[in-house]
Image (cartoon, rainbow, N blue to C red; front, side, top):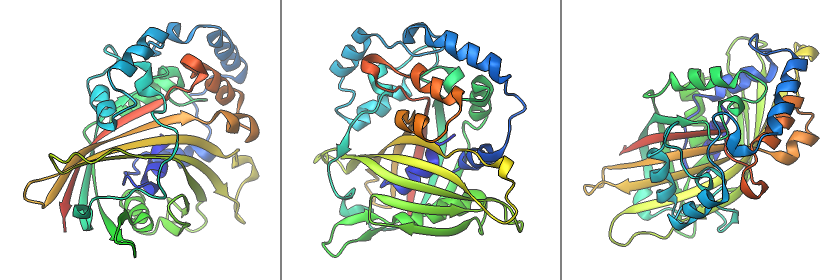
Length: 340
């Protein structure tokens, strides 16, 4: 339930429906949590199992990873989404498909084709949720299986919001990050939810949110920093465009006069990889495509941000071949953009 804030700030417009639950979890205590002693024992026992033997985990052997490479996963962004859409709990995607597909930033921003220009009415429908590292890691520190079931209750839901692309002085087209981030946040949390938003170029954005309009309700700060960016070559045979960004997302409760010190907790830090594919309709009035968000635990932050024992153990349990993290939360959306 972490990916939306990060994906919204990237060059890949994204919905925010899960962020409200994320913010509640920052200072709430789940009544479904088992005792800390029992939870630590369960995590310690599970950590001794090879990744592929853990209940619900995706097959992660080296042969599977090699086969995934031969299928082109990690080469084409569209291929990763297509392979994901063919997967379910029984027909699982190769492990390479659920690890980070790219590293580093290959451009100062995502530069879109000219046909993206202007304002669009967007509709995003949730069509798939997978737990590649296993249901128990879907929401570390909470009842993961229940969280996964609750998330899947939202399959088929759609959200509508406005997005736009703007031209740089150079003539290149980029996403209007501040506008899109504010638009989606308000669509989910209400017209007054956005308290402030500060974008510092294409790689950093600060968002202050007050999910409830009631006086004295908590305010949260989301620090979104791009750590990976990729754009696939344009297909000259059709108006199709693929791009992706990875964002490191840190959410904290902003202290206030009425803040209960007992309700605070360490920052929530995740890394979210968002892939978007777009294809322009021949008439030029709409775009269709898919979006995939993959949420990864941030290994370094789990030890430096005061994370709970369960969250620290989850980082170890979610490691796949080569010690690389496997996504704990994988979601796919069907996109429709209609030109305004």
